[in-house]
Length: 441
Image (cartoon, rainbow, N blue to C red; front, side):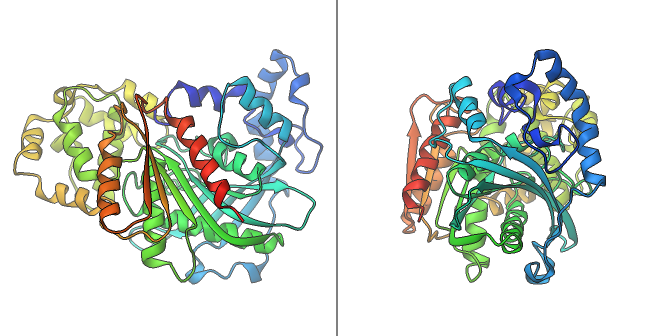
C-alpha cells in the first residue's frame, strides 16, 4: 500500500476511533469523549455506532454555512457548498499518538485542533463543475493570530471512503501542522470522497486544479470564520502526494501567481518523470504495486480519452478485473491481491514489446506531457527520497533535481540512504515540516 504500508493502516485504525470523538454522542457541540477511559469492548461499540452517528450529524443541523460574501472565488471554483464540524482533537491525544506509535514527525503538538469536513466546487478536465471534498484543520487558540496555510496531499488511495473528510487521521500531517499554528488543508481530490462521478486523476497533472480550489475553499472558510491568514502557503506530499505537491506548486506559479504564492514546497518520493517511471516499471521483472499500474491506466484512459480497452494492455484475467478494482470500492492493497507483481504476467506481450520498442507513441507522449520537469520554480523546493525505494524509484527525484536545478531553481534533494518507500515516510515528513517551521512567520 502506498501510504501504504501496514504502518499507516495501523495508525488510521488506532483504537478504532477515527478521531471523531465529538460525534460519539450524536452532537456537534459536546465535550470530547475521553478515549482513555474506554475498554476494548466499548471501542468495538463505537466502531459499530460511528457510521450512524455521522449520518445523524449530516442530516440534523451539524452543517455550517459560509457567508455569501466569503464565497467570491473565480467562476465559483473553490466556493464552499457545505461544511460540517467533525470535532476537536486534543493536544494530549496527538502527543500520545506519536509516543505510542514511536513516531517523530518534526513537530510537537502545542494546541488542540478543530476538524471540519468541507465540500467545495472545482472542475474536471472537460471544464464541467464538480463537487470535491476534503478536511480543514484549525488550531484551537484564543489569541487573535494570523496563520499560514499548509496543504498536505495524500498518497495513493483508490478506496473512495479512505480520505480525510471522513477519516481525519488520513490528513495526519495537516492535523499536526494545525497543532503548531497552521491552517491545515487535506484535499480528498477528484474521484475520491464525495466525488463519485469521475475517475481520480492519478499521477496526472490535472489533479492539481482540485488542490488549488481546495486552497481557495480554505481561504473562504477562514474569511467566514474571521480567521486571519498571514499570506504564506506551504505544500507537501508523499508518493502520489509528492507528485501532486509538485504539480500544484507548478500550476500555481504558471497559472495562478497573481492569486497565490507558494512559500515553499516539499515533494517527497513522487514519480515526477512519468516517462522514466513508466519505462522503468515495464522493463523490470517484478513490481510490488500492480494496483498503481491499473490506477494509472484508468486515469489516463479516461482523462486523455485514449479509449483503450484494458485487454489492449493487460492479459486475462487481469484485463477483466481492473475496471472493477478501480471503481472506488477497494483499497490499493485489496486491488493488489487480485493482480500479479509479474510484469510479463500482467501485461499483454504485444503492448509490452511495443512500449519498450518504437510503438505506443501516443501513450508515451501523454506520460511526457504529465512529467513535471519542464518549468522554472520560484518558491524554494526540498525533495525527499529513499535510495532503495522499489515503488517510486529514487531516480525520479534525481532527474527532477538535476533538471530544475539547471534551470535556476532554488531546490535541494534530501537523500535517505537505504530508505525504502515505507521506511522513508516519517523521516521525510519530519525534516520537511521542521524546514517549513523555519520559514513560518
